[in-house]
Structure formats: C-alpha cells, structure tokens
Length: 335
Image (tube, one colour):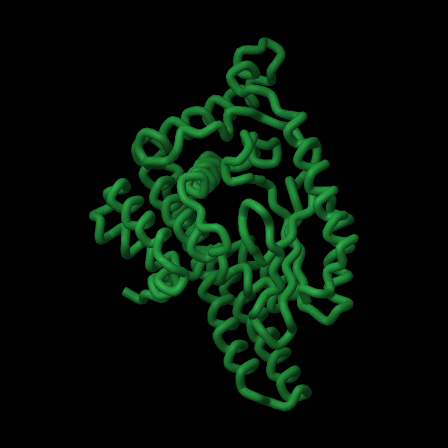
C-alpha cells in the first residue's frame, strides 16, 4: 500500500494536520488564568484545578516530567479531537503504516475533520483493505508542543482523567519512535499503577471499585479480541484456498460477536455491548494488540522493582536504548 499513497494525498494530509494543530493551539487559554477569572464557569474551574493537582502528583509521586503540557485548556467545540484511520489487509495482521517526523512509523493516520477521515477510510477500503475509524477525544504531540487539556476530556470521571494525564506524560518521559507496542504498553502500565495510587492517596477510595470494575470489563474485552486474533492469525497462515479462508474468517468473526454479547450480558457491560454491536474486522484487532500486548511484561518488571517507580523507569530506559529485537523479546515475556 505504500506506493498507493500519492504525493498529492500526502501533502493534503499534512495540510489538514498543520491547520488542525494550529487551530487547536489558537484556542488555548492558560488554566491558572481561567481559574482566577470571575466569569469562568465554577464547574469548569473545579475540573481545571483538578488537572493541575493531577499534574503535580504525576511529577512528585510517579517520576513523570513537569512539562509544558496540560497547563492550558482549549474548547474545540466538537466531540473528538481527531479521528484515527487504521487499515489492514483482509487476510493478514500486518497493518499499513504511515511515517512521521516525530513519532516514527505508526499504524494509524489522524484527521482533524471527520469527513476527511471517512473519505480516507473509503479510499483504503476500495483498495481492498479492512478499515476502521476510531474517534479520539484526546490529542498529544508527545511533548513537542504545549498540549492543552480539551473540552472533550473534562466529561470524564476523575479516574479516567488522571489516567489519561499519567499516560500521556509517560509518553513525554520516554517514547521509542517507531515502536508503538513498547511505548503504549509502558504508558498503560504507568497509567494503571498511577490511578490506583492516586485514588487511594487522595481520599477517593469510593471511586476505586468503579474503576476496578471498568478495568475488569476492559480486560475481558481485550482477552476476547486477542483470542479471536490468535485464531484468525492461524487461519491466515494456514494456506487455505481463498474462498475457504474467507468462510473461516467470517465464521470466526461471527463467533467473536457472540462471545462479546455473552460477556456483555454476564458483566452488564455497556463497553462490551458496544463492541458486540460493531462490524469488526482486522483493523479493530490490530489496535487492541497494539495497545495491550506487552502490558503483562511491564507489570512483571514493575513487580521486580517492588513497585518502586524510579527503579521501574530506569529499567524501561535501558530497554528503550536496546535494539528492537531485545524489546520484542521483552514484550513477549509470559512471567
């Protein structure tokens, strides 16, 4: 697919990316100033003050950078910050990648406009790829710019807001360009560790049960999707004739929908019910693997450090400086 991306299409994407980013930056207002202004809505001021408290905790207790990010607020006047397009061949999990100056090569393309994202998704689908469009309510430049807190994020509960900030600040601390699986698993591990510690240390114990329940639902979703991915990977590698492979693929996706529906009913989970209602394809399964595969290896590393976060960061730094083969071997750990 790399040759299928014309120079015109690439320039068009960069044009919308630059204009979208500049629009976002132009909407920023300093949080400290907004909190002090008498015309600021009291609930908005309260939520923004919470953002500053979470940032302070991240720096003092989780070893995360006291960066320029999340000192500002921006109202985008829409429900998502960007829409990410993912494309994967129908009988493979080798996702199409796009390469960027800062982040390296990633298996997604972000658009600030929903219609543009859908147009790109249609183009890729017409080329025969499995495609999915994922709305993202948050946006990060990995610390290269002063990323603001967005209106799309402030409807989250306290635990999810804290988790997002811990996650993105972890990326700012250490991000391995071109190794999304490693970088995401590291950030997810710090996010989950940090949220639990933060809830307990700030008198929010009552929120812990709900957060733990949602973590269990997410884990069930991931396990179900990854089981389907493993079965489908075997089907794709089986050498079946194309019609037989297509039938086997369809049958496994149908079983996946049934499995998700059963899990949704068992856990009374809106998250699982939502996924059960989607028309899933390889693109959805690729993203699940990207964000979750390897978390167990990082959690084991944290345990080896007796949950001492600075020891953990130092061990991660050493892995980040190693070659990609060593990182892949680490992510595949089962202990």
